[in-house]
Length: 346
Image (cartoon, rainbow, N blue to C red):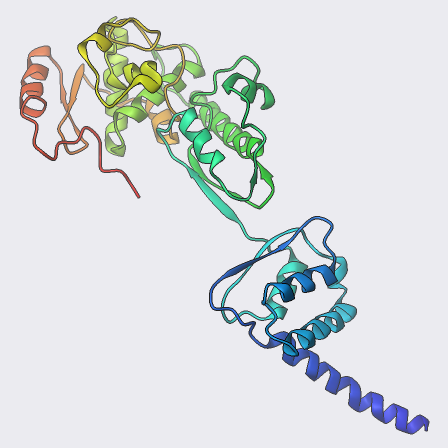
């Protein structure tokens, strides 16, 4: 009798292992990528039951056999005690073993969001508000309250968040995404300020951030950023007003309808650099690292003016007479496809 039992064990265990392996390795019935979520407090049996209800394990009896094979696999590996919370992506051709190994490793799906340079804080918040899989905790807070939540009470939010692609997992809070962007921008600004040129016409890193935001809005042509910063710095040194349209637009807020009128240029707001001297009180957008570097290390130039050519680039001039000729050439005789900035990137 003992010999028979031993024989059954010696034969049965490999057969059971082969049977389990077959159903674990068999591709799941997927026609397109799907997400499987392990929610907080989930059990291994609950996970399998949910997959069965969603049709991810196939039709009976195959679904039942897959569940049994998963339980046997769990009994040998202990994966049921290591359920990492998160989303897991499965693609056609993936097996149940693919999922169980991902769960064991905690290989959760990484979502991403790109916060674009030149956007303002209002646009960033709208982007975050539309994200799926994120926990929204800032919906009812204004900018001042958001900065207080981030540990910067009294700070204006504009300019303080680094444009970048950020990765996150389901359940990440919007405030934590913003905190990462804030900390990154602070590091960039600190490093740039430490390596700044001498004799800049501003005294604090924050003023450099304001200048960087103006440079960011004036051009998206990387090669022009340093020269545009040089023009603005020349104007500040000579006591000339910056006279830059993006500051006027920012001061108009939601009243801006795509056009700047003469009355807008005459209206004295804190941001209208046609009507005020020096820098505006805050940044007007989220500047990139490249624009921050341009603000602290501008390109040496004698230029005092520039005008958009209509293809995204600019014509620079040293004198008012040169500038007026450029305005007549590029602004007063606009082509039908005239653009003051480059084509939007996808």
